[in-house]
Amino acid sequence: ENEVLTLLEEMESNGCTPTLESFNILIHTCSRAEANNTRNALQIAASAYNALDAAGLTADSVTYMSMIRAILNLMNDSEGKVQALAALFKKCCEGGFLNQHMINILAQDTSSDEFQSITGMSWSGRSDALQIESLPLEWSQHSTSQRKN
Image (cartoon, rainbow, N blue to C red; front, top):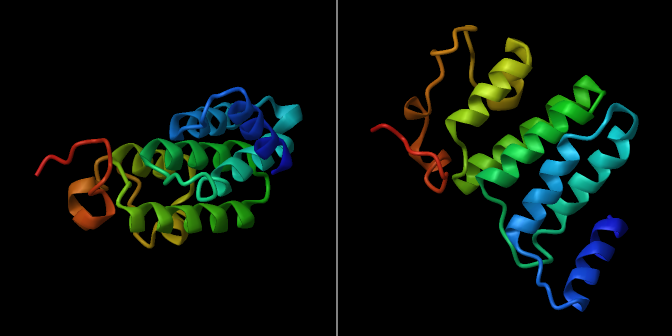
C-alpha cells in the first residue's frame, strides 16, 4: 500500500492528479504480472483499489474487471480467491457496474460451485445460459456495456 501511495504522491508533487484511469491502468498492469512476482503485484493492485476512496474516486466497470483478473491470475489460495471474488462481485453489483464480460470471465475461469459461491447464481456450464439481461437492472445500471432490453 505504501508503494501505491508513494507513487500517487509523486504524481501529485509533479502536478499530475491521479485519475480513475491512472488507478485502472495500475491495477490492470498488476493483473498481468509474471509468475515470479504475483504476490507483490496482487498487493499493489489491492492497495490501489483500496486507495480509491482516499483519492475521492469510485471504482467503475474497468476497475472491477481489472481486480477480477488480478484475483483470478495472481491469487493461489482457492478459498481466499472465492471469498475475494465474492466480496468484489457484491460491491460491483451494489455499484451497478456488472457487465456481461465479467459474468463470462467468472463463468469461464471458475468451477460451477465456485461461480455459485461468488455470484449466488447457479450456472449450467452453457456459455449462453447467463445473460446480463436476466439479472436485476440495478446490478448493471452504471456499466459501460449496453444491455439489449
